[in-house]
Length: 308
Image (cartoon, rainbow, N blue to C red; front, side, top):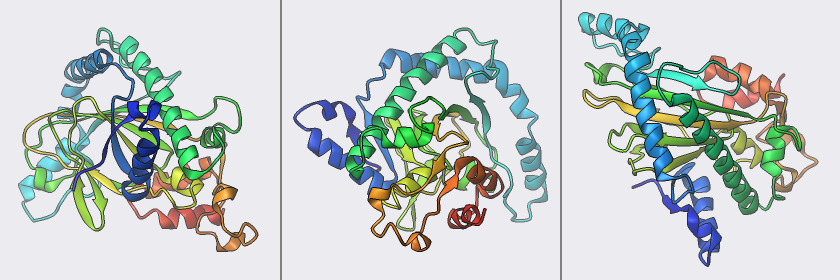
């Protein structure tokens, strides 16, 4: 079983209907799919790989050697008592956001990543328009829901992660299993080093590396807006003894002030609000719950914000 790989360029030609159906299937049956021919130039993607690898080497690697995860794993390996490291991840990570401080010692990093983020945000908005169309919503519905209307208030962040070689991969996860809290996630993963897995029909399945593809997955807020048609999916990262896996995940999330609820068109009996699986809530409240419960099942999070 392999994650669907979809040629995004065919959306603009004779195979549009077929491509829309492939994306609908990716959203409904998988919660994850990979896009090729997505419109982001190979040249830019190669530059992104280069500056992120250099940034890790120059600005991150030494600190990782002294990280909490490294210390905890060493202690656990010495004890050799069969326990696993349950409360930490084997991950070096930082987040790029507009207006925040970015790594500054790697030549070309800021310029390259600013350009990349700009291209990714446009791609995210195209994907949301495809979701609107497939769900029978008006064009721009999801974008407006995330932006509190016509403005530009949605959150767009980029998490740059590396999963270095691990001396005891059997004792720790690269990233513990979770669903993503937000909207649409666009991942540029390593071409060679695997490790990302999704849970489908009770089985963990590898998200196979495809050179210069962008992996798309849907977060909890898309599940709510679609009234459960598009589910957010559990995923995790495993680590190995060799290879330093690169993972660059960009999140197009609602504004913290955005009110999220199932789209009225997708609710069969609009008057029976109490029977809805998904409540109406403010995204900032959901994030407060998620911060405490990220690695736990999502259903209690929906119940917690219903009660707020």
